[in-house]
Length: 21
Image 1 (cartoon, helix red, strand yellow):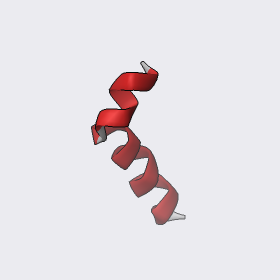
Image 2: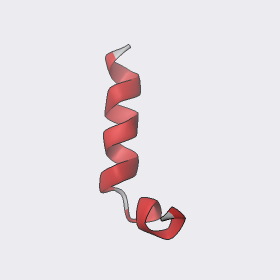
Image 3: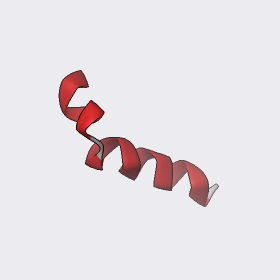
Image 4: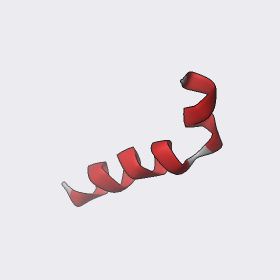
């Protein structure tokens, strides 16, 4: 669903994504 896409974008924009990277 669209919610999943938003979640993925949120992770990318979230600072936590940088920590995972």
